[in-house]
Image 1 (cartoon, rainbow, N blue to C red):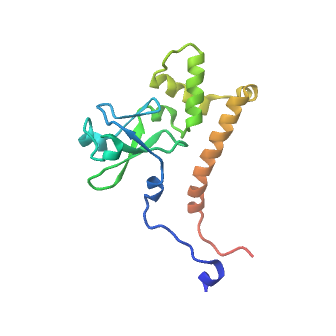
Image 2: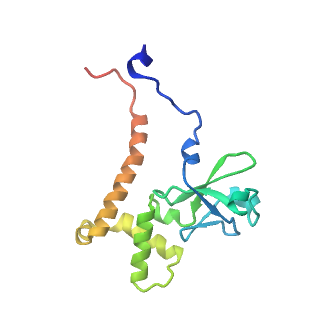
Image 3: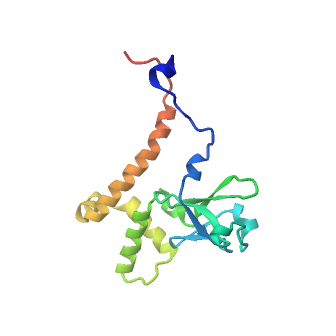
Length: 177
């Protein structure tokens, strides 16, 4: 009856399907971890693969890393032995403590370079991101159109991430008349 009225709803069984669909970047796993967009990501899951070549010939000995450009605070590595995905956190993600995308990262890097820094360190980038995402006052947002647009975009992304969690929290009650 339900299929006849609403159609068939396919629900994937693989909880990691969303990770499998993310774009792949081929990277070397070095002593410090994995470098992407000038940021270094690390996890104990990388220990057995540090400074080794990937068996995947299509990637020239580099390892596939899954990257979500909307949240660069973390990336994912799929262990070839058990095929489980492991989250690799950015070294300074705790300083920022919020998700940030590629446009926020590029904006902060551009501001740092314009302020006179040749190659900003990851600590300086983390400080800039924290300021952009946490410490901007309403007055600052109204002065700078780019900062306002980026802050609004980040707020929308954060709200979209919170919405599924809120939907799960609501108890299933009787339908409203």
